[in-house]
Image 1 (cartoon, rainbow, N blue to C red):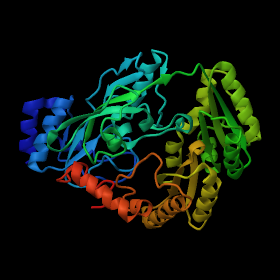
Image 2 (tube, rainbow, N blue to C red):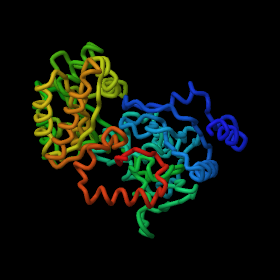
Image 3 (cartoon, one colour):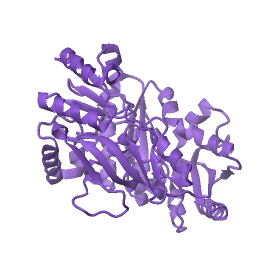
Image 4 (tube, rainbow, N blue to C red):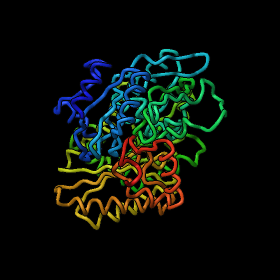
Length: 454
């Protein structure tokens, strides 16, 4: 069937939109999670909402499972085929985002790179704050589908805090436009919110409208160093006791700092055991005053304040490269992203480190400490240790739940955490989740096997 379907789709939409060669299809079988997916029978790349609608309508009528995919930068296996399916990729649905300066909005096709949103906003002295670490290579549709976060979420929130409306293709190829170009809209159910974070299980997002805000005049960045991870984590609580809101407060624990030092010997001060990357913004005077106040409250061993944009980039570069650097530290790595209330951050780090000490694995706890979102990386050497690693992963999830937090702050559920979602959600909510899925996707063809257990 795939050969006949490929021929039909190429005739309708052109050779560029249909990938049928096994070697090229294989490139769509994975993402950044490291989970193994299946090679899709076909990859279809619509260039417009109209094409996407026609493709989904045909596949839905034929009963063909569809794995919906953005740029493939997710870390939960949400965009990889878990069963025999056709991949529908939004990678060709691009174009220059449209900024409406008087309305403070920006509209874009789903395949546009997320970084382009703020680049276009900046041309009008406006600001699109969400900044996942994959900003330069992830797509805005994927960001909405996973409600992506990032370092600036502590002050500015997640992708969803800027979502005003979207267009998606649902079951039978129906095109649904939701939301409005206005800041306020309470006409009907919040359908954009329903698609937000749905990980492609309800339909294919093809177009989004996001809110913009005024661009800060200045940004101040500092690297605060500490003698231990415990001291660095404790400083996060002290920051917020000042009543000020930092733009970013990123934690680097001992293993993170040691890994960075091994990779780039001069990237951190010589005696840096743990660190916080602290950032403020606003007017020049305000941002500097706030940085000094927050730094004093944190009481670090040492402080390096960026004097130039290049120096600021040198402070941030090791953090951006940390996930890759940790992958080089040991043969294998599993990345998780729990979140806990900020007041329980110290307890979370301490309890996770205690659990890891009972195993042969190294564990790095770093990330968006300002909003309680920890990236917990388990480093190990042999595939035969996978079962023990998964047991430690599950313990990390349980710790987050016990502390009033969540099993994922920004990566999503996908394939990686679907077994653990009921632990957090409970039976009543899980039953509701399944009823919503059934209403939105009666045949269960959108991203089958993701989020909800089969």
